[in-house]
Length: 257
Image (cartoon, rainbow, N blue to C red):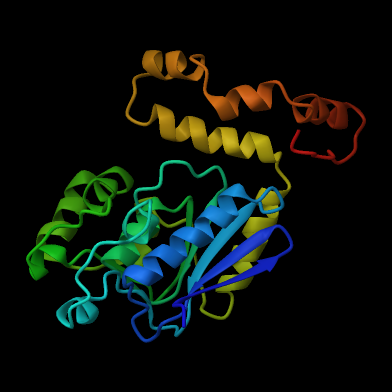
């Protein structure tokens, strides 16, 4: 039985980590999650992903160390690495809807998500150094990019947990809500994203990824160098539809073409 459950609701793909209590990932779960993100990314009918977890206590503990101790110590995690955290091609936004602990790979996934919603009881942690290794699925550097450098270093060196309130204060968490309202908030946010032009959303994610860490001069050079999603939106019918709908005082009719 898969540890990953999916449901399509209109133009939104909801992905659920479904292996309580810890929602930990073995090799198969990682491959299944990667396949779900590929479905989101490649389906023209899907616009946004929401990732949540069953159980309500632990969003995900990341790598299933019990499975590793029992002999499942291979690394066949799928084409984009553990929990798909080495994926560089997403053109659809992913909302992390987190209730409870997000530690190890669970926190690393949150650091890679487009938007993060969580509850008051949510805490984030990277305890890898206390287990004898380092967070090699992106958490080491993404923590330093998404949080103040000294705070990220403290979390990594000591293993202490970041609270939801701290995450919000530092700009990592978008919104804090209750467990009961979490999915409603995530779905409402997804609906707002769906109202935007799909090609423009893809271009936003592409350009943001490509210019990360560049100077302004280098970012403009990269922007005009021929980025596929950005060039596609500029040449699209939707590029004309937006101004036309504004002038005609009506809602735009996006075609994704």
